[in-house]
Image (cartoon, rainbow, N blue to C red; front, side, top):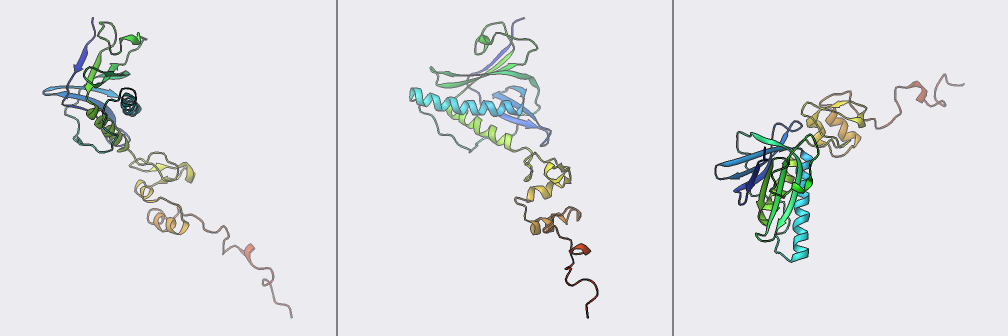
Length: 235
């Protein structure tokens, strides 16, 4: 059976998006042209790699051929969610990236994950042998916008713990820097430094037992008494 190659030569939209809450998100790429919609599922790391490689490819095209390329930007014009319902055509395994000099377009190819190995020469090729694929042609402007939106989608996940940098869960966080104490997620987001006085005043609102000692000396410890003033006075 020959494979299916879904080609979008002038998509109305090609974006990364997610479904689910931070910490439990599923990532998708979605190509749209009029009423035709194709979505594929992939890992967050794959989205990041694709965005980074697109940026590097655009810079290289400008350097080698002098092709006018829009500068990198973090501005995103399309912040709309994915078109629902999302029905993934397949999960992405291999990704390909190329440059079509004739149309001056970045070519993104997403191939379905396979159990066995396959000849990677089928990437960006129309041969009948190989995994199903989605092939999208992007103008240089659309490619920059795809990369910018992808970065925003990735960074919209869980906030990092200010102590250990691990992602915070909505229900709390087992922080290795506090010996496994499960810190409140909202409290964790508000602390950018560890000053004992400020930290204790905030932490006490959640759990009075979670405090930072400013001084190791215990004022109630009898061993801290001045030996010159302890005991009965000498006549």
